[in-house]
Image (cartoon, rainbow, N blue to C red; front, side, top):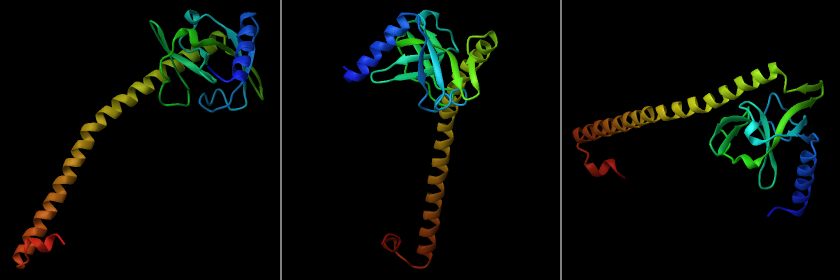
Length: 182
């Protein structure tokens, strides 16, 4: 169970959204930068999780706070979100965690409607790129492993060759093996 104040605020948000009202949240991190900057205000409207579309920016209820990230994948019983400015996607969530969809953003320069056809196309493209970014990162990380192993093998070989040369040089000078290891 969460803090009583959190429970109260959460209940008020649920009531407002259930009544069909738009609820406004202030952005508190840069995880959705550059679209959403710290201090921007987002308008959230209730939406059924099954109507959330890839590319939508959704608000998710977590244990003690709320997360505003882009929906990048839907599969069966889970949804996956990711911040535009974050490399890794969030842990998969159940659809009942979704509070609503961000429909507008208030910035210092005015209000943006995120539900226009053009904004929807851009959002879908960003979601696809965001998901691919993580997949490419994982492939690159996987491919780095053989290179790292090869580098370690070369380093080990180099150290072994140097040690052998030093040993032979010291043998030629009449030094014993004990002289190599103080």
